[in-house]
Length: 341
Image 1: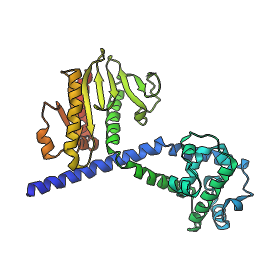
Image 2 (image 1 turned 60 degrees about the vertical axis):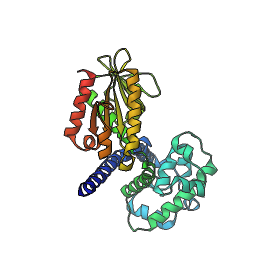
Image 3 (image 1 turned 90 degrees about the vertical axis):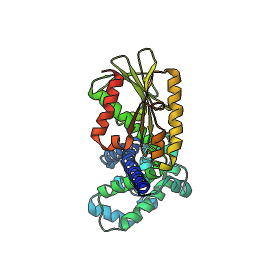
Image 4 (image 1 turned 60 degrees about the horizontal axis):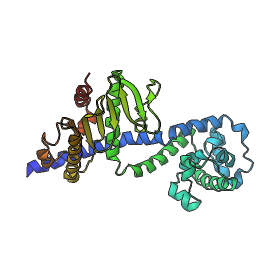
């Protein structure tokens, strides 16, 4: 019984370790993917053009006297804080910035005004003045209330508020995404290794034709935009599903496949095992000699007992690979063997 309790405790600890490790990378990836770092830079550029914007109608835009006076006292440019209808008409994508400064979720804006998702994602590029004005009044009333809750504030505080609001939305999106983030991290490790060894001939873009390798492109940060890489030794790496990663030779035959299972719930271990076996069985039907590699977290005693060389040739603990550089290096040695360096 004591051994079972210890096993349960160890699995719980491992589940939390991988969950929080992947959560951190997911948050950064989503902030970048959703354009929040770029948005801040865009606002800073517009701040330098502040002479092009008039604030004569600020009262009708729901900017309170006390909030305005606070920004004047702190010498903070108003554009970086308050929404302006002309800015939203010119740059509808900045709705996301002012909405998050106002700490209003997308559903809140939809309830209090209308759905702005298409503007924030760039699907709609033109917003009419009355619609922009409605958002300006909504955002500024909330922003004014925030500023009036303190006697001092800085532009760094405003940016922090924007990122914290964005983080709350990303936190909701994080649920059920641990598996996807685990795959993304393993893909990034493999591509980073290939980059370090100067092995990549070209990347395979998800939406365009193969592109020539460019050492100025951050392939790691944008790993989800690619479906693989062509190597200089005529082999290729493909990102897929069931299995997650496939290595093919110059004829197109699969020589190795990798399944990544980042599930952190020990109770679902046997369900993950069934999916693993199905994926590897399919790979072996295509090529009986294919090497099968499993990266999994929270491997229970029963799951471990059922895993044998009939299911997979190599097993790596995903949590260890993410958190331990030595364990990650052991995995990359296996990748080196597969590539045939």
